[in-house]
Length: 125
Image (tube, rainbow, N blue to C red; front, side, top):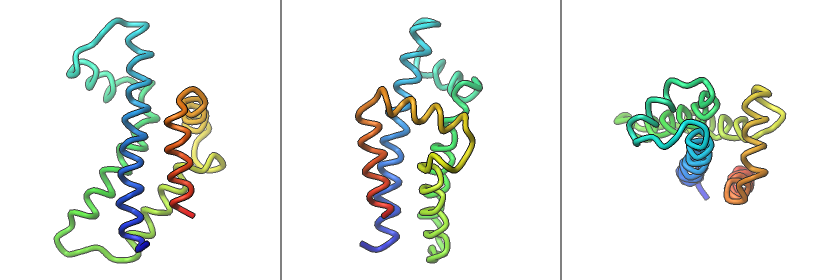
């Protein structure tokens, strides 16, 4: 598989993982604070520090999307850099402890998240 195709597949898996994690965080938040409209939850998602750890997924997905949208084309170094970033995001020995703890906890209670994580790690090689 070509690395650009691998990166596209990983981006889609990241997006699915991001959605699963956001949905779980929303459910937990609404248990404590009551139901929110989509717009109100978006504001909480953006402004509340409890959700800051999820921004690592958001920012990486946006960065990959912007790379693929470049009109001048993409080069091998850009693809490799983003593959490396995904690997680092998923590596429990890299990054900050707070992110890793929250991500590991989410995978422990969400079998789908653990499965997606494993799929991404396998795809990365």
